[in-house]
Image (cartoon, rainbow over all chains, first blue to last red):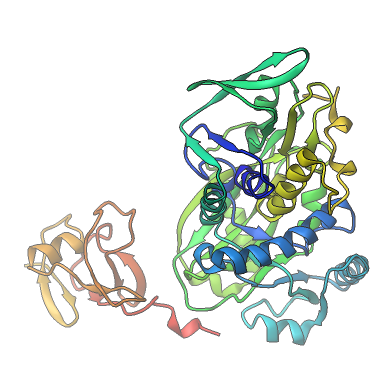
Length: 370
Length: 89
């Protein structure tokens, strides 16, 4: 997220310094799968941001060389287990289509043509050709390299822990490398955006939601798209604090198959839970029985930065002029990053924004800090 | 003497030794080629992390030679590709 903000702000002619407390993609970005999804978003402001981001990722791919960060127009297949579930999925897809998301409805036979290894027990699904993928750490590095080429400075191993304020306006940040002057400071700290927002004097209620990704041994092309159950959409939107599981399975260019998705609100605990891993594996096998004979190589945990209303926080903090936020994108950060970065640059320069910034304004969360 | 067969040849081992250790002792330092570039691989990390030393053991692909204990009469063979090439679609 910080890399995208730096890229678009540098391109807009602003002088940018990126302050990263550890290494590039060492936090939220590096723990993700790199999905750029339209399929899982209901019509509304987040989908508008995702559609703009999809355009921007496509142009970034041509401009920066998408090969370098594994940009792939992979396509998404959403599946339903029952006739009722399929009807609900098709109604959801119809609303998305009205908002500009392409999709094709698939009956059970068409589903098997799209993904031959899928369980024959499924009722049908929907294919979303606009779902894409990047390798997130490489994408962040490519954006930062392009930002540097446009004049930005990238400093790793520098932690921000406070602000400099004069006459009620932010004038800089205090960091482990000393005080740095700035007219604007953007909080793009991902899962740690809540903590950083407090250090910066504009506290926001951003909390971690843990997920695991299971990685199989490399396979030939066995799973062609990102495939997930229609239940996933309901889980993403849910406010439940306990464990929520829905199968998400996808093949990658390198051959490994990635399996998710679990959502748990357990603070910043990133320890691996074997019972959850077991259930994720079982769900994946239910969707793709062929995976029963495939080994897992590893499992990793990540934290999604989520806001109570499941919308990211993008915009100026009314409590402290000069402070802006670009965080709380939950599991969709990499997908929403370019449009967020563009919006941040537009808000600073006063250019007319492509996406309406009002639904993302921090104002809605002020007073609700956790 | 206890031994397993590696690509048809007998390889002696001592009780508790892994397949990888026994292969090294028998003078075999690489037994797999990479999927893309065909370069040779054997033991690298030796502790089950890097997945470089894969072999097929009794018909099961992708076994880490550094972790699987050798057993008398076991059939070990060189693995080509992912070991799952039959699943391609």
